[in-house]
Image 1 (spheres, one colour):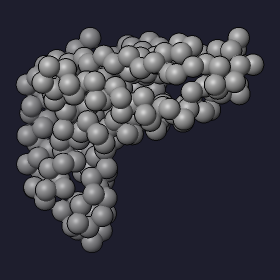
Image 2 (image 1 turned 180 degrees about the vertical axis):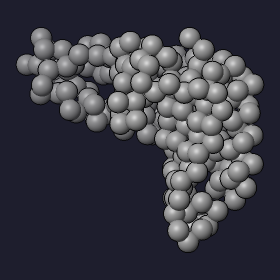
Image 3 (image 1 turned 135 degrees about the vertical axis):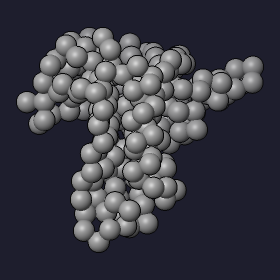
Image 4 (image 1 turned 180 degrees about the horizontal axis):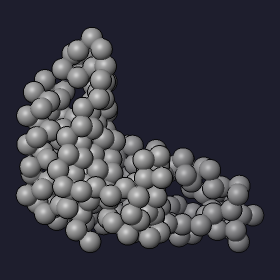
Length: 226
């Protein structure tokens, strides 16, 4: 079972909380899911220099709370909080055309009746970036794009993760690694990564790396000490 599904999805509700926390009726559910996905993509591109690891979205009737988990909070907040205000206005602009009622008792209301969507921002620091699967995968992906030796990159990253206090780590590369004509898979692992044990806190991320020879897939599993 552990080999066939996303390790984080396998543990949602048991080890990991939901990334989107709201309730909607059938009519608006798909639109809000799409809006969440679009907002995450936009923020991921905009806040890449800040090391954005996760975006948690919580909705109420006329308010949306966005929690940003970043490795460099100072880049997002800016001098005197100016960066935070700019980001808040940017999110409000992105959501201006999607003001939707989110609860069943609001389903009969029109979009205009719901009023302007209020945005509340919270910036949370990632205490140990080397124990976050997405940040590790992003680092490996960026270094592969810079044409650095893949073996050295992966071995160094495995060593960093284990030094940070992980129980185990696995990095899988797949594609035309190092510009080879035939695509292959290479795995780098240290410690234990029990994928079928639900109570183990196994973080997982996939980040593609666009190299000169095409895309190289980067998958990272990190088993943290629970």
